[in-house]
Image (cartoon, rainbow, N blue to C red; front, side, top):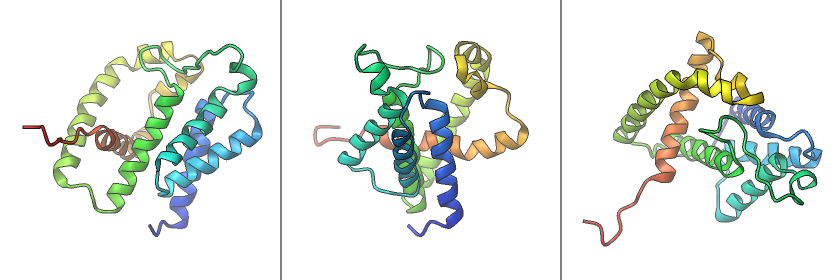
Length: 182
């Protein structure tokens, strides 16, 4: 894909930031290292095959739900507000959506209509989120800082990532017409 050195650094920084958000304090160092490697590779455009999706699930589960803590109990870890819990599957879907949007955008495979649809969804969902942010922060536990009022610079920096996420969700959840569709 011809990604530059700075893009590679940004992908690694994003992987480390995600690990800080979702990693359990008892996750093994090898699991943490593998998580950063896999997420960084996906951020740099590595294809997400069926096997790659299974590996993504494994690495996220290894840092979010270390066997030493969760295996015997069978419990599933969910972080953040009860209305929007971050589970292993939710984190994997988030990563997959960002990766899909980034790759499709860089490949020139996103048309204006799809981008406009993503923009409209982003604007509507952002308005809803801003109205609920205080309540989400109160429910978020140790992730409450994610819901704090961002600075103007942070808002600017986050806008592109948020639009990419919405675009990616649209791309991975797009219902494709079947032969029986009218």
